[in-house]
Image (cartoon, rainbow, N blue to C red; front, top):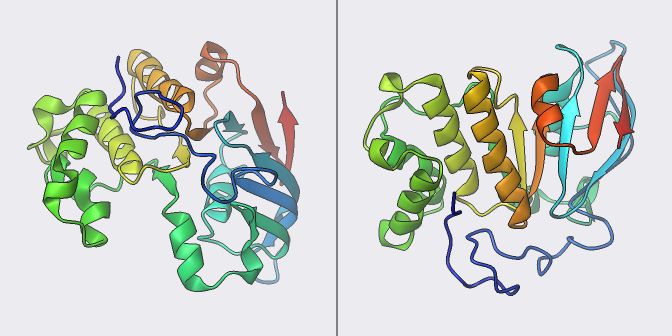
Length: 249
């Protein structure tokens, strides 16, 4: 499988994602760092307690734990879709509590998300779904058409780009969601249970896509409780249970 791209990366590799350490925040602080982060809803007990971890550039990690442990919640904290009750969160080397709304929005665009429920728009074709983040930014189609087509081919959907989501299988929707997450050339991809709705063979194929992304310079975090998947590719595990997180290297 050859990743889509053009030979413009400073490192000389042919990769659409390119070398990321030229961007601010890819050095000492890493892409993401949590320090003693806690989260509670209202006056209830803390659901996440003293969370400490970091995500380095070009890294690959699993976020695991039993169903209901808070994996999706932790991902929403990384995306700043939720605000922590306490503790420090750094994104791309910056303390998020000191950032204005415009900067936070710009930082979110440096991350790609593969949602568990796909979040594809049923009235749009796969091509249009993948292109949507760039259309929202006001990009002209001529500037991104070739890249969208290349991405869809990379995930094995080149012949399905004009299909709409209701006629697709779960695996095809998942691969389309991966392509959409990558169209903005993110430095970090967060995937929430990306193999939860597919058979083992397709799960292995999806894992290979994420492994190739990491080899090309994108940091990857996969939230999963699939032990079989994690045994296929050994990587550090962020283990979440009873509100606490520890790193199993």
